[in-house]
Image (cartoon, rainbow, N blue to C red; front, side, top):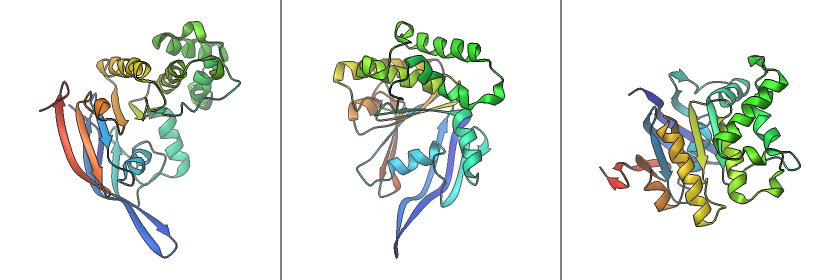
Length: 236
């Protein structure tokens, strides 16, 4: 199976006055296409920094990051933005939906920024509606976020993340703002996407979420402490 993510000696150093803080320290990682991986670690372990780099929201200070066979380590902000919009879908704990904007329009946003596809407004709307149908929310297309439950808002966020058919889905604490039953529903949807072949990286502090993935990578002080393969929640 081909690699979706490869990092080599990946490091991130923040300059804070006269002090240098190494948030990531020579991280080597391989994630295969179609794999679902959890990233865990205590506060300050580097997991948020790692997600930002894997999601092309930030660049490493040192080392190499190859995404879907493309070296993105040294790309500038404009180039990284293009990679984010074309290759990566994001699902956040806080949903990050626009208020006073319908679910349909929220899902359409990535398509608006991807003008090079030459889609007409009607085609963009059709594609966004198809994404909402895929997460079971076609009947809520005209509802604004405040008219939706937390689980429904997260489904809209997932539809938005998938509307451009990304090669990688990044989920940052996707159930963090949800009750356990709704969280289970969202995880069932994420599992369904994984079974369809999506590569998914889940950043979580919840052990029961991590146990549902193919592998658990645990960070500590910016380094990989453990990398454990699993089968059905059992260490392989």
